[in-house]
Length: 634
Image 1 (cartoon, rainbow, N blue to C red):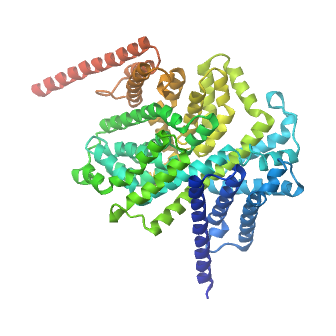
Image 2 (cartoon, rainbow, N blue to C red; image 1 turned 90 degrees about the vertical axis):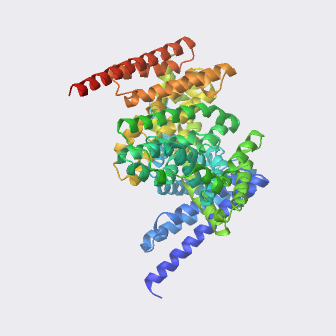
């Protein structure tokens, strides 16, 4: 046997092991979703142990066809250590639980190895940002006694920190990892099965067919399709890489500049995490942290999600009008009716999922039956069958998709563990309150800036965990509704995906658009600027998240939707024709007034917007008369 053939055989063996582990992870999750989860520590440890195996066999020397021997040895040791220190909790669960968190000498060293291997696995799966943050917080746990002012704390021994993070319920194995080990893994398996069955393509075809006959149809299809796919994928980057492969080339062929095509897809994919009924992984974490039913979270997110996409849809339309983007040719458009007839059955699992949530079932149980529905619905037509090969492939896809989320959640557990141990969260909140005084707007601005900065380079779930722990309590202290406060920081964490200089969704779109990622990020912020504004208004006007009587909510929704459209007009500088700076400022102010709770301000906002429309109409009519007169004289 030659060296090359030996390498090929080794790679095939590693790939086979990865598939087996991924399938075991998926089956374990399905089993616990139907029969009930194990104790927290056992469920989460086993979940993370399998995740570690998948990360270390998929990233690094083990995954290479010709690895250097020293690197291979190191990676194998990391793999065995990472798996061993986590499976310890499963094998010796009764003994560990019986000691009520008392740390033995062996567990002290296991805890150190667990933290080290976890940080390395996280670095390999999602990069340095959250690893650096975790190291900074770990350093703070020991250096706090030497720091001044609010940052000072009494200090903790290495044994106390390790015991808190490795054995405690508020460290690595805390709520974030619990959400990954239960809700998130089920949702990503559900999404992977929908994708393998062809449901994702059905959604994109419906979106393209519905919007393709209007100006800028491909970009509108990206907006609609990404909002629908975002419900399934749950992460901005995954959404870009799924729908962007179709929408970005189509937009470029239709006349959109590469950076515009990439920006539209990045913004659209980012907002998908806010779109009920499924939403992104962070929404499930929010339900756990706020102790509110997931259905309540989804209901509160409906109008903010609609406002997000109203603005983006309007921006995309005006961009097409400004640049005279043509409509798609008829032969490029999928037929909606035929698409429904050929693949509509694949979407049956979505109403099943929603119905079970409304009926009071848990997210895990609803996900299980949605997965079962997807499987059986695929057999309605021969062309959509989820064959055993496709089914197992969807398990592997789902397991691989959860890797960055699980690693980020476990590492976020280190950060949260230090925060709870040292009381830093209360100090950080006190700092924001002290700087803002009694001014809620200043507190909201500081909170949003903190959310964007802390969330840079992190997946939305990890970013939300971090900012909700540090800054959301400050808003609650100022009298903001708990759910509104968490939705506010969720928005900030989500928008960090398109905010320069580290904009993960923009970087993902850059590869598909073949454009500069920073230019895409800047354009994405311009297109999504209203998304940075809307959160302020659902804190000030709770009707926008469904708080209040029916009439108040409906009137607030109508006014806010018109206001969001007005803000989009101000962003693009185009209404009936190109708008002047004064007109843009006036429309922007009108849009802001429409989002406020008082009816008088809303009416004033309508008046301003209507006045600008009337002025533009007369100005355009006058220009047309002048043009006609000049042509007749000529």
